Figure 1: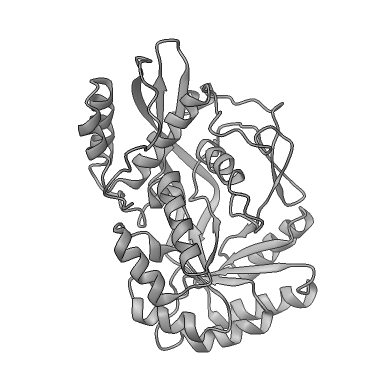
Figure 2: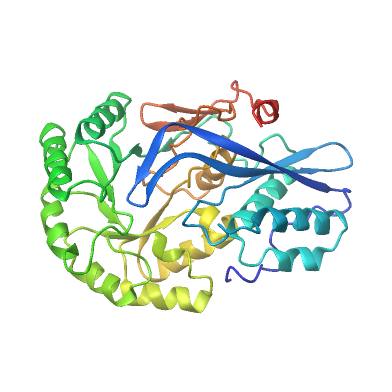
Length: 369
């Protein structure tokens, strides 16, 4: 299945319930600047979809295009979303499905809302031991780019919070500074105590990537995401073959909207891991196709959020919990925002929990518009 073509059963359609769609924008404000090698963000705009049936059951979803990265980070996004709601409300199902082509975050939002509606609404996307509060999920602690002192402080905080796997974004500072910081961290927390994932966000060049990977290998990282910029298949394949650190593809996957092309890239590169961000890949169904592709090339995978609000994060967590992946997932971004929506999600001892006693506060979305 390619992003441009919805499968015939996506998603299960709740027939005969008089469903109406609407959406509203919501501007999330970061507690601190979110820094990557692509720059810093102070706030971001998402869109909440509400599907309400004739019995006033509401299913909710989140469209969260990531600026500078999502295929549908484009000026006509809100116009397209408004048009999709009009088509949905008019019962123009075939046209509605076609209008979702090549808008991955909109596909994600509608898919999320339909699954919530199917489950009875109110944040019931998937039923699992996780969403029943019986089982937690391992996650990695995220370390944002900053000064060496700031990053060191973040790492200490994550360790104190119980994380035994951290993900460090690198590539924005002087490389020697980053390398020295990582060596210092590894000297304090040996491999048996702490896994370190690295994310370069494509920061390394063809001329220096292998040399830098050789130097980074001394700290025994678990993996490195996207060491070189996406779209350089031959270079990425060479890096995957020669890297002393297992390589994970992330941004590389986003533009691969054709199923045949996607398999060709994976077959050539043969990465160790795939990083799945459903908001950027077109939703849960499309991400499950990527899981199948990973199996075909003997690659591992894990799911990572893309800075969604707690609405998107909870839906992602609920879906991920049904996949039974033992690796730490990248689902711990819920505390990034000053005005996030209170939810049942709770991070404790480095694990993500669903606490049913912590209720959603949906109206806080509207209070903070």
